[in-house]
Length: 465
Image (cartoon, rainbow, N blue to C red; front, side):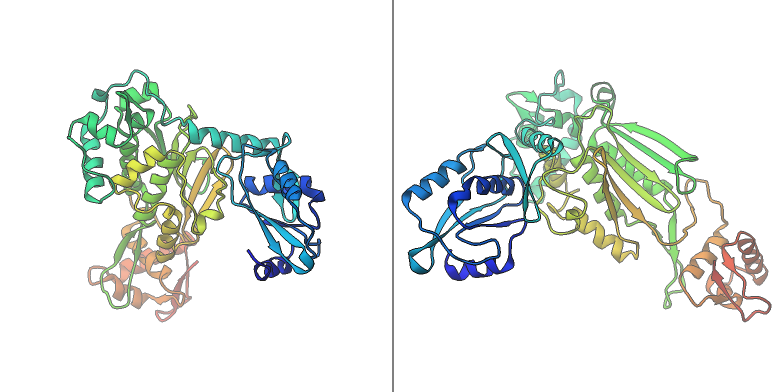
C-alpha cells in the first residue's frame, strides 16, 4: 500500500471496517478493533491518522513494530493480520493493519470478544459469542459426520445411492467410482469412513421405519388450511423417511393440493393452466430446507403449509456463518450447514449451483408475476414464504368451492383491469357455454361479493371486487 491508496481511505472516514489511530500509543484499543474485525467482515486500522482523517504519520522504529505485534498476539485463536509501513512526509510513516473475516471465530482479545457497530468497537454479547462458538465447533465436528450407531449398508436404499452416483458422474460432479459396490459408492460420497456409516448416509438413504425410531427428526409435516391462519385444517399429514423420499412426498403434496392459476392470452383461444407457485422455485426451497436444517434438534422437522394467500416452507434451525435473510437476496458465499448432505443433493442434480438458490427462487417468482419472496429467521426455524397477489380458487384435492365455469370467469376478470362485458366473457369461454349459464355464474359470484356488477344492460363491464 502507498500514500495514494491511503488518501481515499482517510477521506471516507471511520466506519465498520476502518479505524484511525494517531499513534501506536493506543495499540491496545487498536487490537480490540482488530479482534472485532476478525469477528465480522474484516477491516483496517491506520496508525498516524487523526480521527478526522488527517494524515500526520509517526516515527516508526523496530521497537514500535515489536510492541504492536506483541499486542496483536494477545488475540486468540492466533490471527495473522497484515502489517504494512507506508512512508509519508518528514520521515514519518503510517502503519496499516489489515485483516479479513476470521475463519475460526469467535476471537477474543485479553479475555474478551468484540464486534464493530458503525465506527465503534463494542463487547460481543454472550448470545453472539455462543453462536459463533457453536458454528466453529460445528465446522470441526458436525452432527452429520458422526457415526450412525448400529446402522448397516443393508438398511439403506441402494437404488437411490446408485442414482446419486450415476448423476454425479454424468454431470461431472464426481469421479467414476472404482466399483459399483455400495460400500465403494458410499465411500466416494464421503459417507463411509473406516467401514463405519455416517449419520448423513442414514439421512440421505435410510429406511423410513428405522429412521422413525432412530432419527425421528427425519420428518415432514404437511398441512392445508382454510383461510389465512391455522384455525381450520383441510388436510394434515406427516411422513417419515430419508431426505430424497421426503422431497418426493412434499412435491406430491404440493402438486395435489395447490390451486391451479388459469390465465388467458390475447392471441390464444385456450385457457392456460399453471401451478400457482413455480414448481422449480418450490423445489429449490424444499431442497434448501432438507440440506441446511439443523438435524441435531431431535424434535425438528420440515414443514409445508398451504394457506389461501401463501405457501410457507419451514425448517428447524437458523441461519449461520453471518448469513441473514437480507444477505440471501444478493450473491453470497455458500457455506452449507450439512455439506455432506448438500453435496449429495448437488451430485443428484437437485441443487444446481452453490449459493444461488435464493436468487433462483426470486427470479422464478418474479417471472411468474408473484410478490417478492420472503425469508424469516426467528432463531428456531427458517421460513420461506411464497405469496400471490390475488385470489386463486382451489381446484384440487376435492375441496373446490367454485364450479369450473366460475373459476374461468374469475380468471378472465383477474387478467384485465378494464373489466369485461357479458358478451366478451361468453366469447372467451367458447361455444359450449350458453349466455344463460354465464349470467347465472355471474349472479352467483356477485352474491358472494367476488365481482362488481356494471348495472343494467349487456354493454356494462364486470370487474373483480
